[in-house]
Length: 220
Image 1 (cartoon, rainbow, N blue to C red):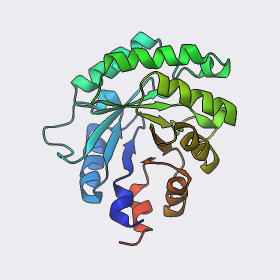
Image 2: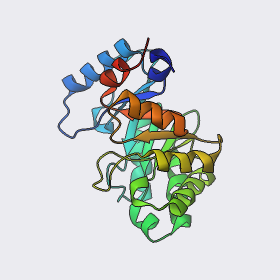
Image 3: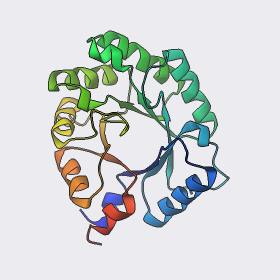
Image 4: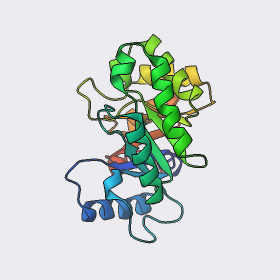
């Protein structure tokens, strides 16, 4: 995979709570320079200035981030406001307590609440915090997301102490959704080798903050 192809799999990400409007503008400027697929920011940093980051780059906003411990109606409201403010993609954190207790019907219901609020063509990615889950529960989380109408399943917020994306988790997710949904690997991907390993395992999108360094490690 060459540099341009890899760039088109990357959501260039800035989610630190202290990120300023100037930091987000710098992210967007870099996204244009690197020709990535999307930028991913906190919903409170929207709307972006007119014309930013450009017509060929999607704008993703996180919802229920980073804990997932929000009521479904709150997540739906946050998602709706983000879309009104210009987001074309939503990255939603599931209720991790529901996942921990195996309440997959509850997980499906909360995802559906958001999906019913932000309809296609808005892209809905569901963050399952795969590092917290064994393979069987990764499968269950993916199936709940699919049943609720999600477009992607995503490994991680990158903020949980359990860790971020792993090749093993991505492989389980990709096998489970089998091309019916996209798979986004996110959390701890900082080198070209790590990014390409995630793609080889089945990732169809990557969430990265070290995008420039990653792309510098790939042949043009």
